[in-house]
Length: 246
Picture (cartoon, rainbow, N blue to C red):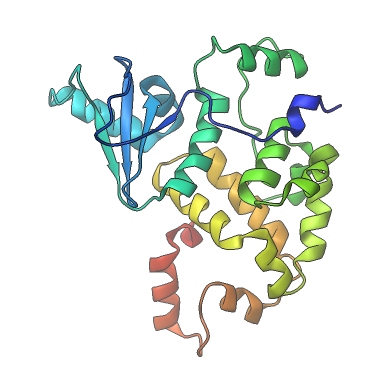
């Protein structure tokens, strides 16, 4: 059963957007992530290290080369914008963020699980039936932050109702546009680049559910392919969407 808090807007708790040039408090173990659109997000070191294999390896390399500073640690992610990173950061916070938060403790009580919450494991190849068995928070995350549906549709989080609703509404490209497919693609690409396998698999499963009733032509149009599709077009498509090789 959903708690009332599960229907509230998902917000960042310990990750903050930094205004450059403005004096702001910085904890010793915070990392500033500089994005492609110029935004800077200040994130807990441990969260990034545990949640992203790519960032973990990069931080370890910086530590070996003694690039850490008590003043500032900055990571550039030029291929990610602030909208996409906020979605990624929400996922990281929930599963890998600080555990002394009152909110996180309440979430654990709701789930009746004394252990740390971890992402639902999804099969590869994808099994769409597994989408119904996501956690309450994951259902909310999909509806609010991947599909980007308006608040009057958030009730579809309950018992995975969004799974059927999104598949039914995706029968045409016009309807599919309401699900913000490009945002899901961007989050998937960021997750693949950051080596966040659970978020990548979740995005892929949500996309697969959306595309289930879309024909080949519709899928190619969604990917921006409007001409004859041959080997050269396939190469360009794979360069633009490298996760298709997975």
